[in-house]
Image (cartoon, rainbow, N blue to C red; front, side, top):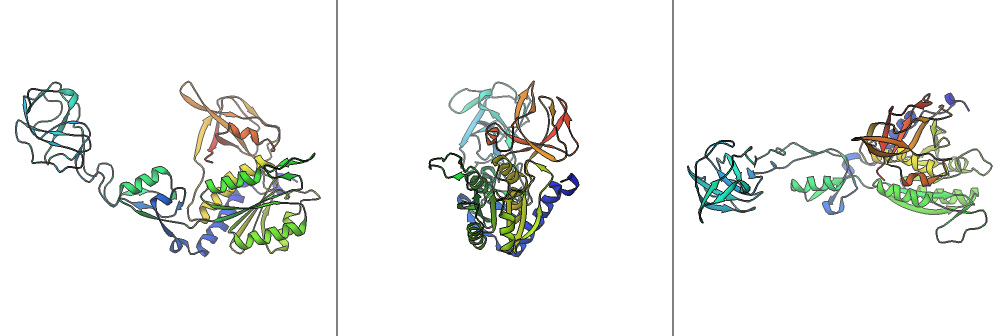
Length: 412
């Protein structure tokens, strides 16, 4: 098959996202979101931007342990000693404004009296009695965090996206007790092939352990979905049809690994068609992952993935994670870095877009991408050292050492 006969992966992704967006709207869109306590929201997709409900901080406060004064400015030589009129701990209200020659002892994070011009850090002071303090060195800054300096009320707090620990902290800092998130997509996962054995079973003479099933379960969970495993199904059309039909009835998305190529036992596309699944595309100009199949039945989507585990992994990162995010109302793509190569890279065939696992290393103060060599897309072991996927465009046969490539960071 010529390159012209294969769908470009960017075109494939746009078709995938179009199906996902329509499924999100059909499920109710933003009106169908659910509210969760922050303690239960980690990893969930949040389709709405959130805005600060308060000024942060909500009052002028000290950035240092020290002494607050309302006379002069930092950098000036100030007379002393200063009479200490009180102490402010974090969480305590500030006393009256200090007058000329007066100071208030203040702790880090505590509110400062109205009119405070700067805080003299404790390291630059010396007590001259129980209630007197001298300033031993001129300050270089005011050591104050002003009200609203971090965020003003109404400012953007967090963009739509998948909630991370940092996102949870941001919401908590603004007083959110709950957050509206998309309902999780239920992802059914099926491994196919007579050669597959489950973990814990004894291997037959021509058997291999199923890695795609556990890998896809983990990737789906990491992508904020709710995965369900329907087992290893042998290469039998009736058995496949029964398993597919059950999964399509119970799930929003079905991932099938194996059985999508051109072999005598690659029954998956035919069985899916018999169940009313409409093909959107089959075969893309992508390495690894050329045989990838994608279809839909109503608002349910099906990805037919190659059986080789590296192909399945890359497919998930390139196509399925963006699909799941869009289905839950959030436009998403992997963080992309432009990195120089640490070694020269050449490839024999440049007829497809290639996603090459790379490690990222620091050399002389800058990050470089190191391509990880592998022989065939069954070599899942290459991912043990992979931190990203370098994308090589169609027609690019060679990139010299130091030449730049786009690297999508892996997050699973």
